[in-house]
Amino acid sequence: MAEYLIVLLVAAVVTWVLTPTVRRVAIRLGAVVSPDPRRVHERPTPTLGGAAMYGGFLAAMAVASVLPHFRPVFRGTSEPLGLLIGATTMFAVGALDDLRDVSPPAKLAGQVFSGSLLSLLGVTLLFFRIPFAGFVVLSPDLSPLLTVIWVALMANAVNLIDGLDGLAAGVVGIAGVAFFLYSLRLSDSGLLASSNLAPLVAIIAVGVCVGFLPHNAHPARIFMGDAGALFLGLLLAATTIVVGGRTADQFSGQTFFFFAPLVIPFVILGVPMLDTALAIVRRAARRTSIAMPDKDHLHHRLMRLGHGQRRAVFILWAWTAVLAGFVLAPTYTNEGNVLVPFGIAGLALVLYAIFHPTAREARRAALEPTADEAAPPDAAPGVVMLEPELVLLEPDDDFEEPQPPRARHG
Image (tube, rainbow, N blue to C red; front, side, top):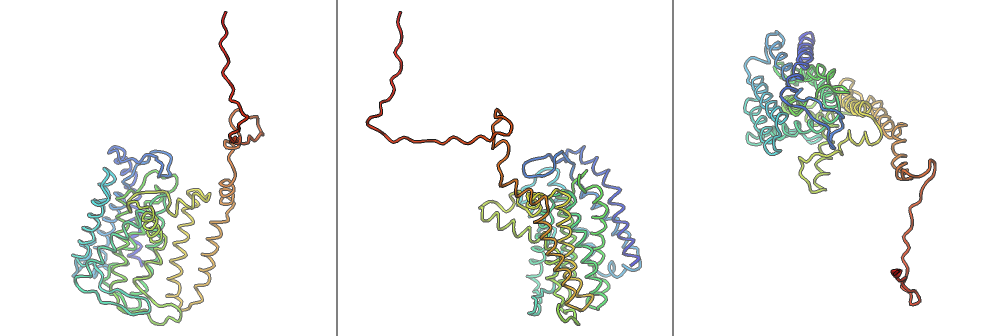
């Protein structure tokens, strides 16, 4: 664990130190996001914070390559090189979009290219496990396709939740801790080789998020931008690929829960994956482009419930932690009973989000007329003006239309 702690600290410290410099550079380059109707921040804020994350990633990979514990990871395999090239490509695609708007098809093409490089250099799915139905050995032509789809899906999932200060970095950091513990458990059980890249990538993802969060917490001084969101999505995709797609065995000894290595990532990443699915369905129902931004994401809905940015972020962080604990706890205890506290915690979190006093006040305010609607500006204080009724008169034979007054002469 000492080597993992060193890598974590290097990634966090380098990211934390580089972020102020990246902020100044972003301002000089004009990479500043101004407030608009689809964003919730209230002042112009520099973006491109993913550059600091990328710097922390490079430093952590360089340190890990010389540590004795990680020698099997870097020797005799092209996977670290594939991760490095794929991450660089994904970061470049996001940074280009931060500096000048890139069309959604072009951005997707860059994501596909990055996933293709990962697959070409060995970071690819080998098995696809279907819960309670065994696993499928992927053919050489199907494996790269599913790998590319998974990379693009994860990159866009992280990008979609990057809507509140600290949200994406916190969710990815919590998910990274869960994947790190999960991969260590698999390694201890003999299901992952010592050369597997997953624990290292997961701990680096945690480190860059920890280093960036002090600058990105509300009120954020810098945003990670597409450069950071797409980059983090690739790190999570690589971690899940080399964990879930590399073992054809289930974890034995479970009485209630068994390992489904390719399904657990969906549960741990429940918040971004659910948000992505809802966004696709919502935009398809409206017959708008899937890439069309809106303000109906999970974090926007929480804010409309009356929760501020900090509380909305905390709720989604807590949901990620509950889901991660839900799938990890049985693997360490071999008991299904351990799921009960996490179920209770999830229910408590839902009740907290819905029935918090600010949420109740927001719902009450939405139902009641505002002061401006109740009384015009010239009305006396405390007086509620009623809307005049429009009365339509039926035509009447006895009704004579008034004649205009005659002009006076003289």
